[in-house]
Length: 414
Image (cartoon, rainbow, N blue to C red; front, side):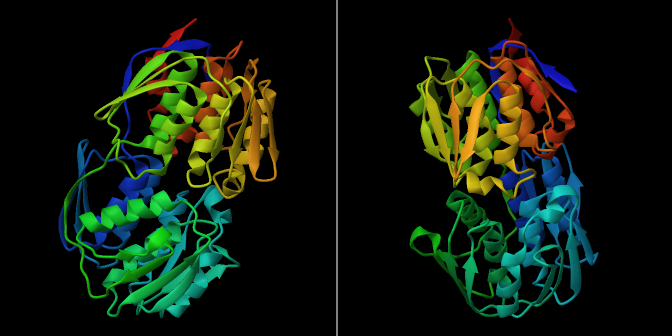
């Protein structure tokens, strides 16, 4: 357990590397023939899962503190692939493994085994591969090769499989076209396209990312690539500064395609004072007011936005709660349960979280084996009356192993 006592926030912090970018770059490097160097790597658990997939696909890996060197071979070494608890790794890997003629069993651990996979079956079959899931959930049995072609893809649950197809289809012998319905998390698709362009691939995206033309017979080019700072992790610290003092977060690209950069818009709407100077973003507490925000494209922000809303005067509305159902926990339910324990006034109504600002008492919470819930409840402890005790703080290993260490480095207890 760990206890977060009521504290002021002061100082500077460097944003950790983006796990979303790291995972995509690892798999791109594994598909490139030659030696790629990924600078500023993340070794969070989800990224280790992607590095494991790269090794299973035959990539040679050399891990260092400041870089990971990946030599792609496209010569699979294992037919059994474990994506641990990473939904992104799972869905992208299903598309990429369909490139190969051998059969793969793609599985995972913990809550990942309940994540929906039904969106992959029909598209992969239409593209020439064999695919079978466990009634729409992992494990998936996949055998290629993909031949390319025209498909329709339902991306209403997740855009992650679309990202996987965009990575795999350029290597097919024929051109491909994808028509997308119900697309969620568009910024993550833009992130994928940006990384693929950096690795030498050409993909023509239609308006609103609802159609794609992917020329076949392309090849990845090995690259030296910098993993940028993570807006998802930085969002927690920006909220901490906004509710409990002042903070400078370094290493953030102002022009990033990361979805969670939207935290800046929310904080400004709430009345926090922000100043961006190059890769450094300064945030300072002010009189905070309620906000309304649609987080449908950036669902990872929901937990920290709930913590922010508890410190805002009035009722805040966070839309897009349906995106929280298939995460490490049912996050909408978990947020309502745990913040209510702390004295929060929070409820879920249809597709929205409604939070009325109030002083939190504090107390002990269950993080539901969810790194984002643990981080959000830590923020709640900063401005609570009694502090917050969090069970199993090690869950942050999934995305940000040093989260609690970094948080405590900028806390000044009252």
